[in-house]
Image (cartoon, rainbow, N blue to C red; front, side, top):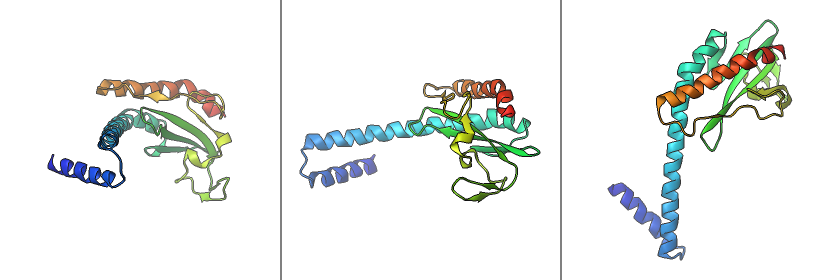
Length: 177
């Protein structure tokens, strides 16, 4: 508590040098405090979601011969690689799954970088050649899995099972492309 009070006083002194009123200083301080708490909460929700995805979805991917580590997975087939990347909303509360396919050899990105199959991610593939889980084309939004209202572990698990269900529904269409 003492460190927090000291920080508050220091913040108020630096604001005071700008010529702002005490009311303005308090407004900015309260805004900053609330915003920081909100970001911490979103961060914790995201951490919770990642833990559950690793526990529930990653074993599912491994059972389908995907290798890699969260958030990037790859499966090498005879002549191609299937790529899966989890992409989180920067504002928190949701994520999507990006799917792509690439040759199972050293890959040359559209910007000229060579990437080995062991390091390839869905982000390395041209935007036109990747899509989100649940979409039919690269330009559809796909499914954004929401965990914004999750409070209990079972809420996060429910979201993880939605991902698996979506993979099951989408797999044949994705594998054909």
